[in-house]
Amino acid sequence: MVDFLVRASIPAIVFTVFAIARRYLPARSARAFGTAYSIDELSSHFAFTQWLVNAGMLAIGTVIALTPPPPPGDPSTRKQKPKKKKGREEG
Image (cartoon, rainbow, N blue to C red; front, side):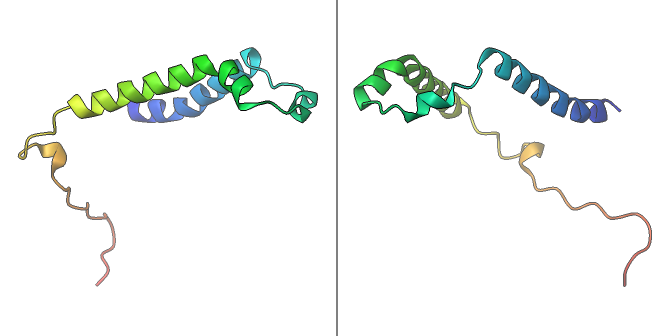
């Protein structure tokens, strides 16, 4: 039952995130797309975003590198046998 509630709440959470993003990060006017920008202007405009993405990639890479692999006998690393279907067996 709890598993169903968790799975059912995912679309609601995604919808809420998109609604909040649409509210606080509205799309720009179509007139702004006709303007040509230089690389320097774009780099200065998105400097914080570039820093944030680079820091995030570094953090994720560090976490992956420092996470030890599971031990060889760990049950989560074993392949699971496929479950037999209940009901009529085909022969």
